[in-house]
Amino acid sequence: MKILSVVGTRPQFIKAAPVSRVLRERHEELLVHTGQHYDDLMSDVFFRELRIPTPDVNLDVGSGSHAEQTAEMMRRLEPVIADHRPDGVLLYGDTNSTLAAALVAAKLRYDDGTNPWIAHVEAGLRSYNRQWPEEHNRVVADHLADLLLAPTDVAMHNLGREGLAARAVKVGDVMVESFEAAAAHGDEALPEMARTLPGYVLLTMHRGDNVDDPRRLGAWLDALRMERPVVFPVHPRTAATLTDADVPLPQNVHVIEPVGYLAMVALEQHAALVVTDSGGVQREAYLAGVPCLTLRDETEWIETLDGGWNRLVSSSPDGLRRALADDVFTLPGAPRPPIFGDGRAAERIVVAIENFVP
Image 1: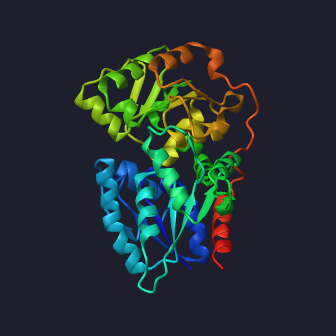
Image 2: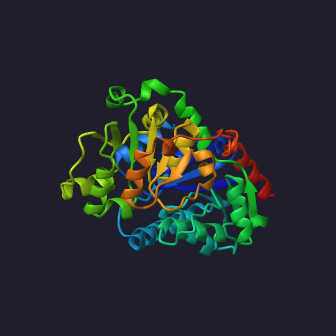
Image 3: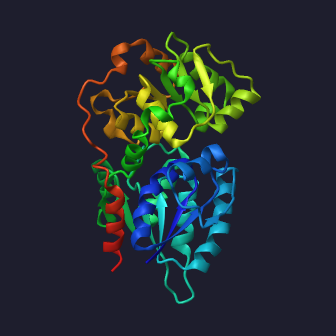
């Protein structure tokens, strides 16, 4: 069986790594990188650290508005799929790369009238916030896909509510495998600055509604003004706002460049608290056993809210300020069950594909 896998962002590289290893033991995989994340710190380092095969095709799309980026991905991806004629297309997550690949594969017909099937890893996630571009991407991908590979019971429930249960298989979260492999490197991958700041808070922010407006970004940072040190690996999007608008940094906030996956997991493991607007980091904090404050009004990972391991502080910097002032708010109050599975999702994904395709 020939499968064309589409990735484009660092979370997708992390998800694809274990699946690609299992796929290539039993089938032929063509790996396509859209180029949505394209510099070394956001792309190449992940391929090296996660031992992902070099992409067979790089579309080199780069940045742009949502419409420009998605349209250019579709334009460049269509001839790749048509030329290689895979049996199916494998998608990950909720990015513009996912949306573009789902639309192209769903509409494409080979010259013999057949078309590739579509399988979607991380199907069924819902925040129910239609202001987020990712929410539209994941909903469209799920409704276009032929096989929905869901990570959790909640994701399966969401798919059932939308009439998609017959296409869905619960496989667990493939991120568990990548996280466990990275966690084994532990201390050796921890950035030097973090070693000098015991008890630090780990901060990540990259969503446009949090970082594109200098005043709003400055308000978030001001809410983090406290005695505890904050380690802040800065996403390129966030760095641009910090630099262009000369946004002031509190003295306790220590900025470092974006880090690779091994270093990011080490930072999460050693943190006393995680503050983030990232879906992936919410999960990783849970897997690391570190409490997390999420800078949103809702989350697609509602399972992590049980027991207080993850708490929504609202989309207001004042909410974060109040949460940080309340020690009880940052302490989990219940056990941490294995809600994301047992670390064998990659094998289950490949088996589900094999069972789907006679």
